Image (cartoon, rainbow, N blue to C red; front, top):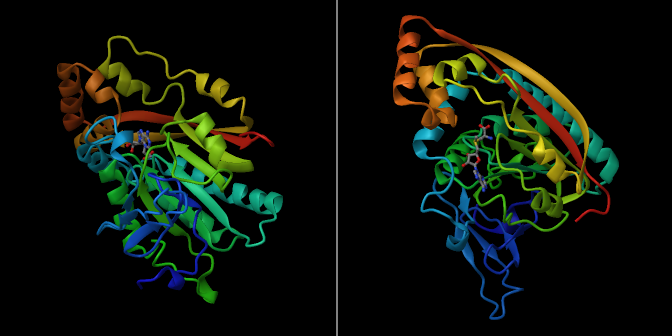
Length: 329
Ligand SMILES: C[S@@+](CC[C@H](N)C(=O)[O-])C[C@H]1O[C@@H](n2cnc3c(N)ncnc32)[C@H](O)[C@@H]1O
């Protein structure tokens, strides 16, 4: 497939990160239409071999390789693929379906579509569950933007989506398959989303950044926001083994910051009991901030104990469901 005419799926409303002109996705290169560029220049963005597009301009980078490192993504991928966090993944999938049904009803979209953004998608464990949940919901042509500032994260998500024939150019409008979710993996910053105002039905941010104003800008009125966070007591026994003093978890300050734009509609709590061997414990440490905050000897002692006997701890999560207030942003 080489031309955009052949891609009949409903694409998200993308913007060029350089000139803000509409950006048109294609199989090999995404090209902006240059309509907002004084010289009419059309900016091209090549699709990487793995199937993602880099929409992060150098001036929006605060470091050479922003976001999670390859090592952290690999650890997260090994850990999550063993389904230790499956209860949370299933909860998210269930909420996606509920939201999709409500959204279809409330937006009366003539195309019966759904545009979802997973911010800070990481290696894609929850992204693929969202894609699956959207595909079985009562909507046609769902699209899912998998966005992260980390190139290794997006490359991993894209690689899996490509294997599953879920990339935007692999999902053709096919009367028998209008429910397949088209995934658009992109490297971009959550604080400068390359998306048109009021164009999305839903955003998820799972242990990832929360940008109230930017999220309100791109969401439609009545659009949904799902936020997953560690709950109090998350990995308590692991933190007790790592630190002399265990600090309480994040405050709910982010809810105050969201309040001018979003109304909280529900809170869900879920936990998972974990029994971890040394490798899984090491991966969990690598993918959390605890690893570098802990003293090396405490970390090594904990890992050595897991060699003798599997380490037991409990993961606790809280998921907030919010809705964009009418008339905001
Ligand atoms: C804790 S990880 C969560 C990943 C994934 N949602 C999961 O739960 O497996 C946070 C992710 O947010 C990404 N991230 C950090 N700052 C970001 C930003 N400004 N814009 C987009 N992604 C960002 C990181 O690269 C990382 O992949």
